[in-house]
Length: 123
Image (cartoon, rainbow, N blue to C red; front, side, top):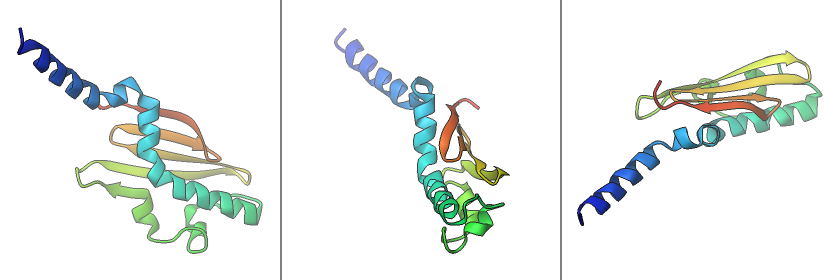
């Protein structure tokens, strides 16, 4: 009996830590996406403030609003082999959509605000 409780606690903690995206999928997806999308969303906001419209493509953000290699900012394979991508679409001069698609997480933005987020560790 003494062995059962510690084993149950260990197994339970492993399951809970591994299932964070099941328990809080929207939060997990947002946390994973944020470091990748936040700089792009900020650059889009600055561009919009200066130009009074959103750009036709993310290329227009370089180099004044966003630095570095755009391909590396929007497409990557992690050290664990997980792929993710950021896609941008201008709907009209005042509206854009941005999506972050990861092996397990998807987050969709409209003008910098999250419209949908989900996680699925089993896909």
